[in-house]
Length: 112
Length: 116
Image (cartoon, each protein chain N blue to C red):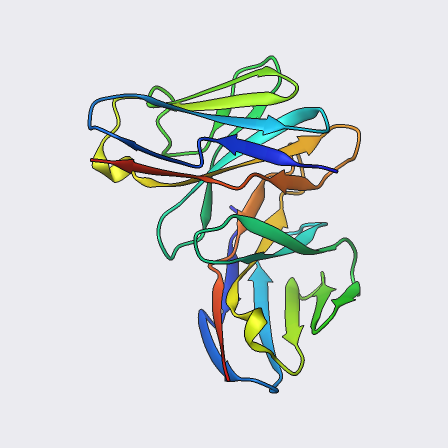
């Protein structure tokens, strides 16, 4: 059974600081996704990472994937208040219908 | 492109009644649709996977007789919560995947169900 763990679960950080969210998964997978969720809303797709060593960046967010370590990171640079949200990673099953297993989520609060 | 809608966006129903939630892919054909539920401050849990024209595949622990899923066309899947109870109150989110575009799932806006 695929297990996906994120840490930290909660993160409170000051504006302008950098931080990293970690996503570990338990079995082989070839796709990893990062999503953002605002309170009361559905998911917004941020990144899809398809191969070992993949790195993607959008604004102040950068995601990377190490399939050998079964680890993905979401790095936040010079955080701003608008980035406050809950961030989920999700790992696709290797076979079948591409079922996604979601991580526990990281609730990020940016303090002015 | 790749827009998924859900209806209703929120619903309140009484215990013992049934409620139907619709998930539509607006600008693509969805060969596979997924239904998730999310309790407050928790992650998303996959309930079932449905392929157009065939029976849904339910995840372990999800009662198929309680959560009826119908994927009748390439643009519509429905989730019916039968004999609803307060513990069924949750945020239900669907996603859809196009057979032609490959792997990515596109998520609907979610439906908040409150059972009183």
